Amino acid sequence: MGGNGAGRKGLLRLAVILPALFLPSMAWAHAVLLDSSPADGVRMERPPAEIRLRFNEAVSPVTVRAFGPAGELALPGPTTVENDELRIPMPAVSPARGTYTVSYRVTSGDGHPVAGSLLFGVGVTPERPEQAGERKRDAALLVAALARALHYGSLLAAAGGALFVTLVAPGLILPAGRSRVPLVRRIRLPAQVGIAAAAVLLNLGLAGVVLTGGPPTALFDAESWRAALASTGGPSAGIALAGLTLLAAGLRGGWRAVTLAGALVAVGALAATGHAATAPPRGLAAPLVALHGLAAAYWLGSLMPLRAVLRHAPSAESARLVRRFSLGALAAVAVLLVAGAGLSLLQITSPAAIGTTVYGQLWLAKMVGVALLLGLASVNRLRLTPALRDGSRSERDRAQRLLMLSVASEMALMAVVLLLTAGLGTTPPPRALAQPVAEAAGYSSVATAKGRQAVIELDPARTGANRLTLHLAQADGTPFDPKELTMELTQPAAGIEPLARKPVRDGPGAYRLDGLALPVDGRWELRIDALIDDFEKAIFRSTLPVDK
Image 1 (tube, rainbow, N blue to C red):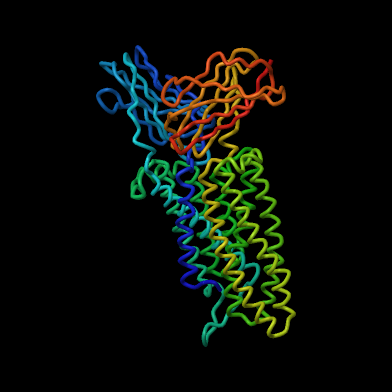
Image 2 (image 1 turned 180 degrees about the vertical axis):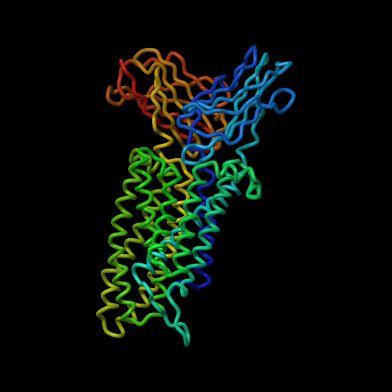
């Protein structure tokens, strides 16, 4: 079966190590700050009545705090949202002269956090203190990533197990020593439902910890739970718990229709949150997520019941049930592949993003895992299942042992795929990071490299003289300044070789290039090389359309 102690320890190590490999470069912020009023780092002669922050998509405020020369300021009113703009009222301060900081934390439409700060001076030129490094929230991020994987796995296992015992093997009784027990009890399905419910709550609480930016111990803070419930994760958790409650009631009362309804509702909760479910067009993305989750639940949730059937049922009964499961698995795999392909097309905007973004690399690793799973399933269906049904006694025994080993291997691979899926759920997709935003005057786009973001603006985006501005931000939204920054622009269609330019600094993380002469129209390719330190470089790429 592959269930020895060494195998379990290896799988546990993989479960801990795999998310950690991606966390340092994983950006949890899926919305991007495009501009602010006042601009970051400016000097003003009088304090503003309000602060305006404009993002590339709608956001919801979590916490907003303002600090003046004498300490924290009491905001005179609530922060409001108008379209994609956050409006923060500022109090009248006397004396007004000094440096001011506005710290904000918001959630994007897919339920992920965006954090940053705005610095300006009144009567003085503000100086941003040197940053000691990126915020050390790796512990909370790692725990939250593992909790998300546990949430996915336990929810799909409970729902899929219910589908198996209801549709594939209804009323199956298995030998247990000198007695016989129902399959539901053999696989401890009610306990699986309870574990799934606990995982839903744990995942919700830790999502709130990430939203508020606290350490893992903030799981016990009311602020974390308020933030989680106010995000799209709150309704999703409510739907999941309602489905699991129905599922538990159906199992206890032996009501097949209620059990099936509970499984469907529990899986449907996945379509209520996350960037996969909220990708435009939402009317297509959410159903695709639900179908993808349902097919995955049938496959994943059937593995433990199949193991119990192969281990305890007579060979003839095992062959009948394996064949019956296999027929449903064909439809499930078809749905899984079609829905997965649709979601991938919505999220990955170009083939180049697969190799150049963290999301694309995680997606590629997941596809390798899925391909291995499909390979095992093909061997099971085409070779082992016929041998279990029609072979000689020795061939049936061998096929049964190999099927049990194959199921154990599938369970291990499923664990890896779930970890990668959790990584995809917490990593900005190319659709969110690189989707250009057309402006009334000029052109803007967002590029990403190694978890960092670059907001690029070209004005007026026409032939002749242009101004190119650049805003660089870390994964948590804070601006950063590289040791060295260079740009190259090329126009392949016109045969124009790279134009090397060096922008000037215009504030923390802000750079500009005035008088940029673009002689011809068309699509210009921009490459930005940002030297982070002596050993690391981030390369941002974007395409800038230029009109006549």
